[in-house]
Image (cartoon, rainbow, N blue to C red; front, side, top):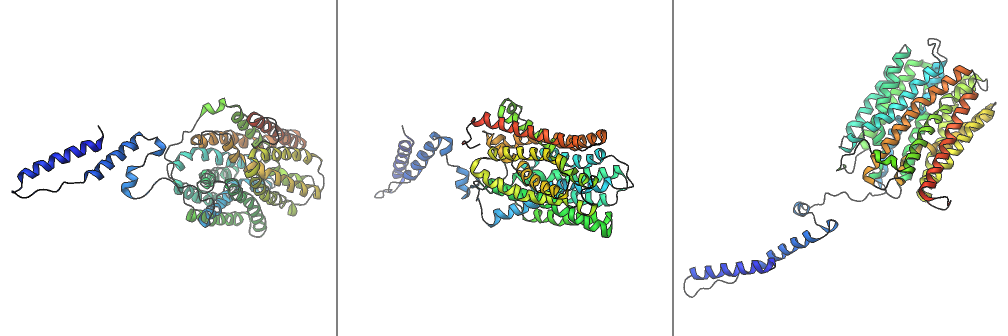
Amino acid sequence: MSSSTIVDEEMEKENRILDDTLPTGYRLQPIRTHSTISQALDAEANINQSSPSEKVNISTLENGRDDSPSPPPDGGFYAWLQVFGSFFLFFNSWGTVNAFGVFQTYYENNPLWKETPSNISWIGSIQAFLLLIVGVMTGPLFDAGYFRALITAGAVLIPLGFMMTSIAKTYWQTMLAQAFLIGLGNGCLFVPSVALLPQYFSTKKALANGLAAAGSSFGGVIYPIVFRRLEQQLGFGWATRVLGFISFATVWFSVLVMRPRVIPKQKRHLTDLAAFKELPYTLFCIAMMFGFIGFYGPVYYIQPYAIGKGITGVGLGFYILPILNAASIPGRIVPNFIADYTGPLNILIPCSLMTGILAFIWISIENLGGTIVFAILYGFFSGGFVSMPPVAIVTLTKDMSKLGTRMGQCFVLSAFGLLLGTPVSGAILKSTGSWLGVQLFSGVTIVLTGLLLLWTRIAVVGVSIKRRA
C-alpha cells in the first residue's frame, strides 16, 4: 500500500469523526491537504531509492542554499589575483633558495670565515630541505583550514631570518638564522603556493602554476642583485636587512589577497605506501630525487667557478646567477603552457635531458661569453624541470583524494636530494681541487633523471611519441 493511500484513509476517518460532533444541518468540507503531504512522502521515498549522485540534500533545501563547492572559475579577476599572491609566495620561498648562490660566493670570500665550500653549501641545502620537508608536514594543516595561519607564519619567519642573518658573526649563527629560520618559513609557504591554485583553475591549471612558479625565478634575480649592490654601498648587515624588508612587504601582500575557495572535507594521510607498488609513480619519485641531487650544483657554484677560473671579475661574476634565474622565467611559463596540450611528462623529459646535457657542456666553458650562454640555456631548461613535477604527479594519480599524499611523498625524496646534492659537490671540489668532478656529478645525476622519466612515460603510455602523457 502506497504512502498516499494511507494518508487518504486517515484523513477520511478524521472527517467522519468531526462530522458527528457538529450541529444538525452542518457538514464539514473534506480536508484535501493529503495531496501535498502524499506528494512529499512519495518524493522522499523516491529520493531514498535513487542513486547517491541523484539524492537531494534535504538540509541544503531547508537552508535555501547550496554549500557544495562550485566548479573552479578557471579565470576572472579574483582567480588571477590568487596567481599574483602565489607568485610572491614562490618569490620568497624558492626565490630565496635560488638566490643562495650569491651568499655562497660572498661567504667563500669572507675573510672572517675559514669554512670550505661544502660546509657553506650546507646552509643553502638545509634551507631547501626544510622547504620541502616542512611543506609536507604542514599539508594536513592546510587541509584543516589553517591556510592563513601558515602564510602568516611564513611572513614572520622569513623576514626574521634575514634580520638575524644580518647580525650573525659566526658560521653557526648564520646556519641557525639563514638555514633554519628562513627554511622553516619557506616550508610554511610551500603548500599554500601550490595547493590553492587548483581551487581556481581547471583547464588553465598548468599555465597558472607556471606563472606563479615564475616568482621563484624573479626572487632569484631580485635578491642577488639587491644584495650585491647594497653590500658594496652599505655593507653586509644593511644589505641583508633590506632583503628582509622586501620579503616582509611581498609576503604580506599574499596574506592580504589570498583566500581558499573550499576547505577539504577529508583529512589527508601523510603516507600512502601502496603508491610505491605502482611502477610509474615509483620511477618518477626516484627520478626527482636524483634530479634535485644534481640540479643545484650549477646554481650554487656557477659564480665561484667563473670567478675562481678567472673568467670574470667579482663585479660581473655576481650577476651570472641573476642571468640564470632570469632565463628560467620563460622556462617556467612556456613549458607549462605547452604542457596543457601535450601532457607534462612529454615536456618534462626533454627539459631534464637538456639540463643534464648542459651540465656536461659546462666542462668545456672557459670564457665569459660561453658562461653567459650556458647560464641562459641552463636557466631556461631547468625552469621547466623544477616547475612541472606537481602537474606531472597529477597525471600519475587515478584517485585524486590521494593526490596530496602522493605529492608529499615525492617531495620528501626530493628533499633528501636537495639536502645532499650541493654539499657532495662541495666535498668533491675540496677533495679533488678540480671543477671537473662537480660538473660530472651534476651531469650524470640529471641525465639519469631524464632517462628515468622516459622510463616512467613508457610505463604509462608505451613507446608511441604521439600519446599524451
